[in-house]
Image (tube, rainbow, N blue to C red):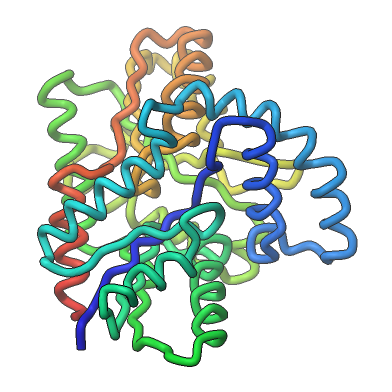
Length: 316
């Protein structure tokens, strides 16, 4: 059977404009896996208040990172897919859970190339209901609508895979070889509401495992690294410790040189380039820090391509 690879990421607005961002936020936040509130309560609030108010501010943030080629997340994903296709000698396409190209477009693109079996790889190293499970739900729902259904393999996570751990560690080592080592390394993962742990979501535990394995690969002592979480939204308690609060506290503890890496993000996007690399840098320097650096995501680097090739080859 001819196999094709479907790389899936969260998504991005089509343009850094309030209208495009509003469409994207509405689709994203309407997903019950992302906001598990009763639909009659949540959807009117989303459409009438949340999306209209947030869209202009989020659009400004997107404009600050937008490139001539488009959204960084989409650009990096396309380049990664092309490099991976060459490495595997297989069809590889990218789909977004929200926005364009959607999962239906990704499946169509592979089937037009004669693909009979699809390896679905969400670019989320750590599993969560809000990300990986949502991709699975949508993918299976789309297959149900088709008269001719391909075989498929779905990769739920790769948080502890040696190839993943070594790829992230190698990225950090290369950065330090060029720029020198900091006093402390923060490994920052996207946050989720704290109640997700009580509901059985393994995301927090997988983030802890990934961070510890990466620190071990780098031979870091306990005081040289810390796990943190970013991107809080709303008044509820989220997974901690919060990245921004830790950054405010570190200078008073004598830590004035910090590097931040985001191992949960396969490619750079709004949360890494605007929140971590810019906004949180200002927080740290204002608190008395002297040197703050963001270590880029794996993006379309050879480390990433080789890591994904290894993950896929062991399953097909």
